Structures are given as structure tokens and as C-alpha cells.
Length: 273
Ligand code: DGL
Image 1 (cartoon, rainbow, N blue to C red):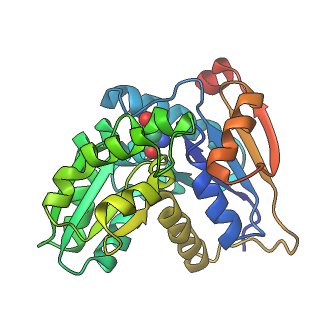
Image 2: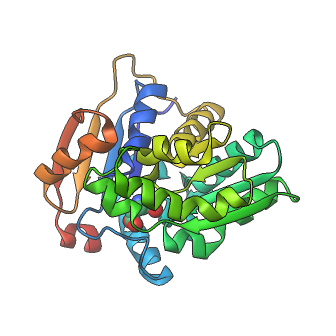
């Protein structure tokens, strides 16, 4: 038994889809979340910048007495590789959980991956999938405009811009006849309806943040690290930009009001600790 909180971080608010799933699966756990809203996006930055931001984010999270760190960010997870701990603290990203789910779901062994430019460039999903299933065929494509579109609430499958961008980004994957598609970025589950409509109902969509939450549940269970709290856990949110903006934008990803306090932290607190 371990009553410390679960730490989750992301480049912004997209990782709240993972918090929502942790709240659903493990309602008694306390959650500490950090969203680096002042420095989003990460996905268009270089590997070394993403690495250094990720280290600062994880150092911030670990100062809150957490038992597990989850990177809900597809970009950070891709750059961090298959590591299982961060300085001795259990860690998981979204790549391995999503790769496992995709390998379990595919029938024809043809798996598509969409993510930010840094995620696709890293080849991390391909590596993780091949480690499970050597003969898998993997096709990737980056969808950079999906992030600003999601943050501006442009996600409806009936929206002409959504239709156009979905077709443009997914055409090469549809042509390759993938039967399973990893939504390898926090923001892409918001386009699930549009993507499903374009790809066809027989293509299985894997939401990386939700898979990471399930993976964390089985990890904590296996390691006998679930909380002994009997009442519902609390969420505590931190952001590196305005707390009010965090709360307002969070609704898009959390599916309603977020249930927890939000505090803004300064860059000094984040960088120097
Ligand atoms: N959170 C990022 C990801 O999942 C998307 C936004 C960004 O580019 O930072 O890859």
C-alpha cells in the first residue's frame, strides 16, 4: 500500500484526458498534475529542448511526494524512450502502453501512428511495436495543425476545416490499409469522431493517454502500491501560465469542470526548483 499521489505531466492541458481516466479507474488515488502551458507546444521543438523541458517537469512533479510519474505527453514519451524509472521513481510514458494495446487490437498487423513532428521523427512507436510484434507494418504521419485546432475548440466532425485536415493527414495511412491507429498525441482523441468517420468504423483507434492510465493501474496493482485511502482522492493542478486560462481551456479535455485546485507556478520555480 502506498498513499502518495500519482504524478502526471504534459506540455499543456491535453494530459487531462489521462487524469480523467486515472480518476475513473482509480478514484481513491490523489493526483498531482503539471501542465507546462507557458511553453507548449513541445512537438515542434528539437530533441534537446524537449529533453531539458521534460527533466524540469519531472523534477517539479517529484517534489510533490509522488509514487509514480506518468508522462501523458506523446512527444516527451517518445523522446524518453522505454525507461521504467526516473532517478529511482517508477515512470511510464504513453508509448509502450499504446503499442501494447495496438498489437493486441490489430488483425492484419498494419498499424498507423499519428503524433507531433517530434514524435514521428523519433520513431519511438515503431520501435515499441516491433519489440512486441516483429512482423508489424507501421506507418506514421504527423498532424501539427491538430494541436492548435483542438485548443481553439475546432474538433467537430462536421466542421469543414476538420474534415479537410483529417483527410489530408490520414490519406496516406488509409491507403496503406491500417486496421489500427494510435492517436499518439494528447490532443488527438478530440478528433476521434472525425478520424473514425474518415478511416471507417472497422479501424480501431487507440488513445495513448487512456492506455497509459490503464497501464499505471496494472503497474500499481502489481507493485502493491495502490492507495489505502477509502474516500475519493483529490486532484491538484499546477500550470506554468495563468491558472484561470488553464481552468477555462481544461474543460475541452476534461469533459467538464476540473475537480481540483489550480495554481500557477513561476518559471524560476520550475527551472531552479
Ligand atoms: N502534449 C503534446 C503531445 O502529446 C502535444 C502538444 C505539444 O506539441 O506540446 O505530443
